[in-house]
Length: 396
Ligand code: GLA
Image (cartoon, rainbow, N blue to C red; front, side, top):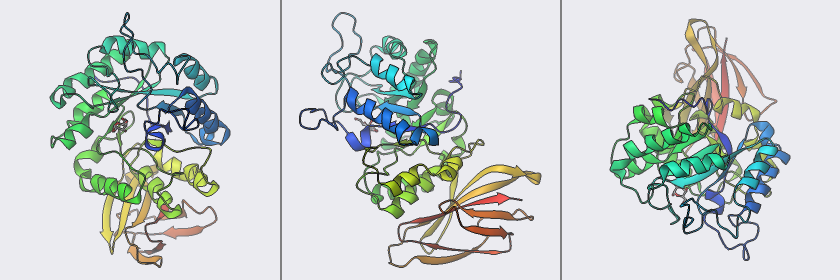
């Protein structure tokens, strides 16, 4: 039986608290940063007022640390932290819905969440029903404090219980990340039947190093991971860091480009009030977002690497006669030797074989018109250190 909830036909887009706000729970010390109703109301409003919602960002997702340490004594229901969510979750969900957004919530398959709050394992049916009562639209189910060997049965079971509530909820599973960590091979065929998206690997941190490690992981393991992405079921390389402390302007473009090649969920984790205008432009770049959200839902791949310039390529629409796809192609520099690095490829080398050629545009530069290129032509690009150049090759 499949998940069959009709959701996430393109990778989900939104905002989530974890990477930036972690488990800050002291609202007296950190009133603007603590995990509280305020934080999520503020970010829901910012998502709309700062133009992110218009660009496609939709889900406001509460990550860990929203719970009381204990369930309700009588009902055994989960209880949101009484100080930080004094009204429970419904008024927050209402607000999020009233301004046109959707509401996501974190829980954990095991006895406890990773930060130590109660998990779902002994109360799966009750919790699925409670999520529906709280008008949740998206569930991230983590896998701390659980037996990895139970997950192949337990995660699908919780998905069935979510479906049985009758409320459509996107289901994000962390099950394969825990299996990979333990050296076990995830069963991607089963995953894509039961989950809308899944975390494949380690948590992202606020650095280029972390982005690079994730790129390497997806590049190295693409043969067994990439084929399983598609409408309704996505690989998840974790949150976007843009707008935080760790990435430069060029590195921000790099993460955004590679994530869109990977058909990744575009889930930001940042303080939306503090994102600099030039970074906001990257996050809201309509052409890059269109690559991520391409209707075919084919995940891209790292196709080659030359002189430490990696070529990442994704087949996208429009598709012309003879089944020739258009492509988004990112040139990711793993170099740090100062000057922008000039590199030349023939289109054939890049895997672009459409005899009629391609109309090429720079996805990060509206003004540039590069013209038409055919398979035998050379394509020249210059990539900044730790940066990216990103083009759409529209098949003719
Ligand atoms: C795990 C997950 C993270 C985050 C934390 C919360 O590490 O992978 O994304 O949800 O737990 O504790």
